[in-house]
Image 1 (cartoon, rainbow, N blue to C red):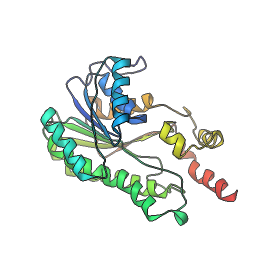
Image 2 (cartoon, rainbow, N blue to C red):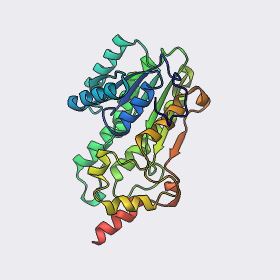
Image 3 (cartoon, rainbow, N blue to C red):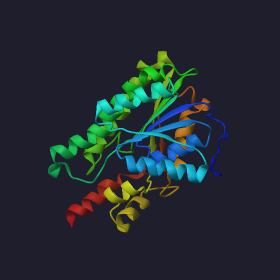
Length: 275
């Protein structure tokens, strides 16, 4: 277990956890955190080599095994196959974390139809597909189930230069609240978590293209600075813990107050266009 964790080591003992986009970045951080707190964890993403690497590195570092299977949230057939696999392995599901995402900087005026469709398909449609497919297993959870959808701090405001992601994340936030009501009678809680700036490899490649850009984002974080997957995992653990059993249809913002200050994408994009 991480020395920095505030939770008991066996908090999720016996719990079955499914994390999309779980082979890298924050998704892998979430997976390892649940694993280190006693859960059985299944991760899924598109690339088999990344899943194998994640499983090998996790076992080497923590001595614990991840279950994995390739899955593309844009392809309902692969989503159904993953759920069939979980049904045969576990027969129920306690926790689902919809983490799979895609994003890159592009002004709307020059954004292609394919660029828009790809991000919305991964983020919004993917969250819908996986949640719906997981529903029968979540209903079987003995002490209630929990879903956490990963959003962004432009989901409830403007998302300049990442409009595809902003529209998709806004949809996920609305879907979160809709499912919280529709599935309450099944004892399934549904919440969203808004992370701070985490410099994963994907973020570095598609958003933080240089040190100057990263510094712009850093300047818009009032407290805590650029964070890491381990800290963000603590927020997800909380939302899925018994301590949060009265919380549903809500969002936990863990961005160091960045959303209160302004949108760094707007400032970055303005400079980019001016240049």
